[in-house]
Structure formats: C-alpha cells, structure tokens
Length: 314
Ligand code: A3P
Image (cartoon, protein in one colour):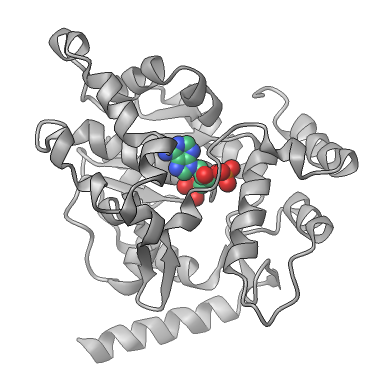
C-alpha cells in the first residue's frame, strides 16, 4: 500500500511539473490548473479529490481564501455543529487549535489519496469551478467567507513573512502587491475565487452561503444565527434564552482563542512535512489593518482591481 501511495504521489508530482508555473511568494512555484494558481502539495491533493472525492449530503464545506478567516470560521462551525456533544467548560477548542478539529481537505487528500475524513465538517480553499463534482451533486452545504482583499493581502504578507526561511531575503511588500494583483498567488486570482462563490450563492442560496468576515465581526450574534440556520443546526428559542449563541461567539473570539495556551505555545501539523506554530494563525483579527501597512499607491492598485472585477459585490 505504501508503494502504491508513493507511486501515485510520484505520478501526480510529475503531472504538476508539466503545468505552466510562475514564481510564488516563498521558495516554491505556483502552478496553473483550470484557471487558478496553486502550490504543489495542495494541487496534488486537489487533482486527487477531483478524481475520486465522494461528498455526503450531510457534509458542510467551509471555503475560504488563505487568510480570510479560516481559523475563526472553523471554530464557529465546529462549535455550532457539536454544541450538544461538548460542554463549553470542557471543550476540544480549549486544548486543540481549530485546524486540528477541522481537516483541510486538499492536504488530507495529498496524504491519504484513497480515503476521505469520516467527519461532516471539512475545509478547503478550492475555487468553486474546480470543486469535485460530488460536492455539487450531493446536496451538501458550502459556507464561503469573504474578507476585504486588502486585509486578506496584508494578513497573507505577514503570514508568509513569518514562515519564510531565515536564509532568504525578506519579502518585499511592493513585489507581493504586484504578484497578488497579477492573480498569480496561491489560489488566485482572488477575484475569480470570490466571484465563483458569490455567483453560486445567488444561484443556489440554500446550498452556498456567502458570509463576510467584517459582518461577522460587526454583528456576530446575527451572523452566527444565520450560519447555524443555513447548515441546518438552528438555535432553538430555549438556546437563545440561555445565551448559547453568546457562549459560542465568546469561545471562538479572537481574544479567547489567541490567549489559550494551546494557541500561544502549541503547533499545528499542516502535513507530515510541515509544522506551523499555532500563534501564526492569530495576529490581530481586526478589519482595516491594511491602512497601517499599505501605501496609498499600493491600496489604489488593489482597489483598482476590486472596482473592476468585484464592482457588484463590495
Ligand atoms: P490578521 O492577520 O489580519 O490578524 P486564516 O485563519 O484564514 O489563516 O486567517 C487568519 C486571519 O484571521 C488573521 O488575520 C487572524 O488574526 C484572524 N483570526 C484568527 N482567529 C480569529 C478569530 N477568532 N476572530 C477573528 N479573527 C481571527
């Protein structure tokens, strides 16, 4: 079995090496596949999923672009879906990073090409148009999180700067803006990623929910309630009266999660080959931080694309 696995891995890796490539943010290239750019490992997982992933009607898929709120929404959805199983005082999120509670589908598939996680909450960064057919056919739910592209970019830049090997020169902000706006960043172009799910949410409103990071930040009660209803785990009026929604929001808040020992000093094994310090997933958790980092020119450059590509949406 191990040999078979290695052979599949080798074949996929060869296949990816034949695809058009461009310089990525780190040491790796990004590879072009069906209209989008991907890093090597997740792309191998994606190709595997496209061939053989079997979705179940009860599945809930959390879809995000990197740095648009994955950690937060993993925590929220996990807590909402499991609230009758776990007590708030003895909850898995108090001792495990949200990424350990909700599998990242493409990395899981890269390492386990012949199986799927036996859980109903799964997360992915896959664009809508390349989703495995069974996800759309199964009747499962998709929650898509949209975050302001300038905030997403700045968060990504900080994240990549932290993960960057020390022997390399620091990431230059201007170059990163340029690359983000060219669409050739991991899972980019960001505008096509967003548009795919936005259109799907209009066409299939009971299947695809488009939720904004900023809206959840501004009115978490309302949006957590909507989230729960959408995935068919609505809060009952007794739960509302008992303050359960508040408890969910409080448990998953940036202040609470980022101050837990597990997220301050623990690490998350993203794959057998990579380990990320949990604290890297928690920086500020705010909206509008781009103003402190981007020059007017850089902001205008990103805004230009947003206005052109996402004008009906923001
Ligand atoms: P900042 O870098 O702007 O602070 P992802 O989870 O998709 O990797 O995104 C990471 C971003 O979400 C980071 O943004 C991080 O601080 C923020 N974040 C993580 N947990 C959060 C939470 N519980 N509430 C709000 N934001 C959170």
